[in-house]
Image (cartoon, rainbow, N blue to C red; front, side, top):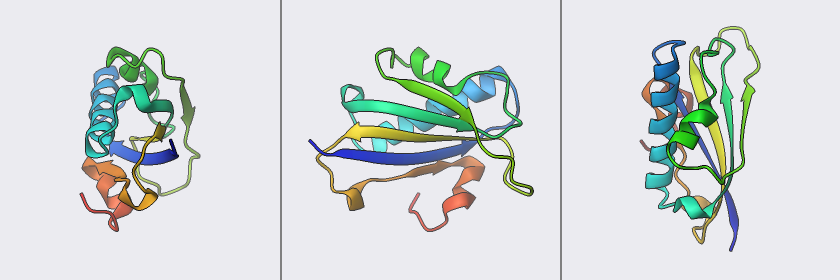
Length: 120
């Protein structure tokens, strides 16, 4: 089975634990749903957060969703001056029979402005 990478991002309301957990859950759920990914086909997920998001680990939200046997990693985005604040991103590696052109990357809330070239 081929390995595919799926990107996603969401801008959350603030640096609060619940905002990070809820935003991450929404993002992970949308990535899985829009790409027809069974959680059993997840290989790993790398989460990033802008430097202004420190109240919780995004990976914890994925664990709360039941992704307890998937390798997860959290890291910080580089602090580029003028970049969009309060953004959680993910890069999910999945086993999928879909062709690369069929993969739907997911950008939600304010983060949709980061990829206006993608259908929402």
